[in-house]
Image (tube, rainbow, N blue to C red; front, side):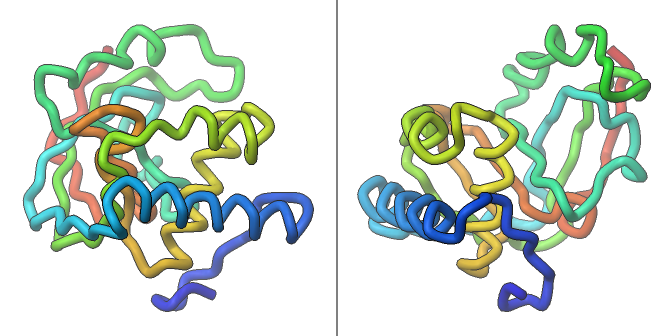
Length: 170
């Protein structure tokens, strides 16, 4: 359980590997911003393109990655339109906003690519789950400014912490 009482299912096969991954994320956070916490104020807007057409498809068991830059709101629209074998949900662009102040770890533009290669077997989905579990254990609501993107945001409990402002079919 994390400090907020949410269960955290550990996502790496071996406990030592998990400890090493979390230690590496701690080191990245410290090296990039000296463990700076950024508060995303209530009402902060962000956008996400993918296969989530409504608030009902959001859940608190998977993190949601998005951008705070409206000019980049459509950056993943092409990917979202690609045929999907894993879901029949339609591709959609979401406009979301935070429904309360959120505590996030500032990664100060540090890339997670090497971390993904070294600790997540080059699997993007495993990296997302690992970063989510790490943030929850640290009592954080998400991560900002990762992957060399000033406006990248990862929210660990999107259904609880975000409000859907608009959903636009792609």
